[in-house]
Image (cartoon, rainbow, N blue to C red; front, top):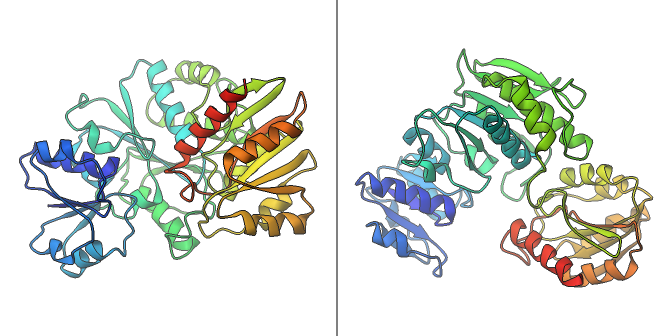
Length: 411
């Protein structure tokens, strides 16, 4: 079997296959990727340029979510009729556990972790996996068969599934995103909706109120931010009340009682990099929203702080979105925007047309320094980039961690 891409998901998939005595060849274009544990497990590792001949005689290709479908090895496998699975498809086949699948454009990680908190409050064994950080295949052999798994699912993970069937599948929302990888919004949305495809009678599909038809045969439950809840969420913002409503609906579908839901809603304080207060320096609050990697994700952050004077750090790598709608959503409480990275020119054009004050900071360090000089007691400095991070950072987590370090250095 062939595993393509050796980031966290690919490594976990290769190791899970090797544990079963399956002959595995693993490939990554990055010649500096860590391979020691793979080689110790008997995995044959190939690094560097892709050789389509690696697909010859292969029974299965397992693809990491970061590997585009059109890469030479994946294309060669498809040409040869070799099945292509995502890492979560492999995980679903290896693990007998009941699954809650959480997808959507924004709010996935927060809702995934909130659902896990509800399970724990109800005394039910649970693990989180998928796009949230720990690959699904990494749970193979690590958890009891009756433990629930709350799995965050990206469009890239859902592209190549065949049998994955969540007992409860939850779609939070759909907004344009990842248009640098998907041909268009329709293809992106279709990938997301695949989470429902294999559901049967007895399963539950949880969707926003008024959302259109979804595939599969599950019972349908709808939610909205205005739903009555067992408790008000500790998390700030209307978008987080919507996440709480979604989590409540999914938890009830999984058999959790309202007291456990109420306990989790009233105590869950959120996840790193999503409206995370990382410091208060001289009366100025610094908020890390590095996970806001698209335009739609920034709007809830702006709403959450609409009553405070705001210094907004925007920018990063481009992913096919346009910024005029974001510029129009920026209210008068935003005193200035600080632009960084590859998206600076496009953001500057949109902000200029909307009359939003801004400066070209270039990098995160300069942006934090400039915002700090301008901020007064009671102001908020918000990193909510509306862009991916790959121009200057490994991922949004590294970007958020760097922001946190910069704030700590101010103190």
